[in-house]
Image 1 (spheres, rainbow, N blue to C red):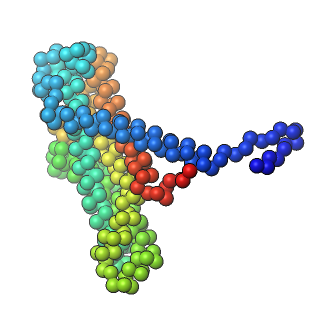
Image 2: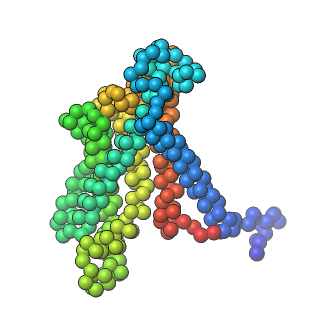
Image 3: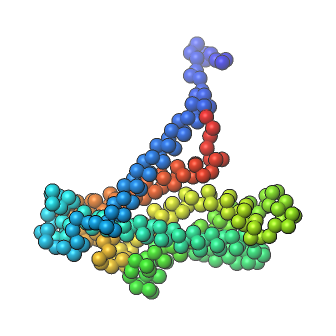
Length: 296
C-alpha cells in the first residue's frame, strides 16, 4: 500500500479496508435485529401469557390503594386497588392486537389500492393518487378520532380507524414500487409472451414490492400502538376491562408523585415495544432485500 507523507513528515492513517467496514455494518445490523427481537419477543410473550393466566383478575380491588411493589403485587397497585402487573399484561395483549390488526388492514387495503392504481389506466391512476395525497395530508390521529367517535369507543373501532388511516401511505409506496417493476424489461418480455396482468402481478410485482413495505408496515405497527395509546388517553380507546397502556397513563397522572410506577411502567413498555418493532423491521429488511446489504 502506498502512503503519502505529509509536509511535516507524518503519515496519514490508512483508510479502513472495505471488508472491515462491511463487517462492522453487518455486526451493527445483527445487534439491531437481536435487540429488536428480544424487546418485541418479551412483550409478545407477556401478551400471550395474559390470554391464559394473570396474577389477579382485572377487577380485583382487594390489593389496597396505591401499594408499592411487593412479593404479592410485583408492580404495586393502582388507585382502585387493582394489580398493576395484571393490567400491564392485559395492556401488552391489547397493544399486540391493535398493532397486528391495524397493520393487516393497512396492508390489505393499501396494497390492493396501490396495485390497482399501478395497473389501471392513466386517469384511474391519477384519481387514486390524488385521493391518496389528500388522505396522507390528513392527520392520522385526527382521522382515527373521527372514526372512533362515529362508531363508538371499542377495540374494533380503534383497529379499523388506525388501519384505514395508515393504508394511504402503504398504497402510495405500493403504487410507486409496482410502477417501477412494471416498467422493467423482464415484465415487458412476460407481456410479449402472453402473460396476463394477474399473472405478472403475482409472479413479478408482489415479490418485488413486499421487501420495500417491511419497514413502512413496521412503522405502521409502532404508530398504531402509539395511536391507540393516545386514543385511550383521551377516552376514545378500548373501554374496560381492556387495560390499555394509554388509559393507565391517564389514570396514573393524578397520583404520579405518590405511586410513580403506575405511570412509569406503561410508558416504558410502550416505548420498548415501538423501538423493538422498528429495530426488528430494520434487520428483517436487510434479510429480505439483498441489495441493501454489503458483502464483506
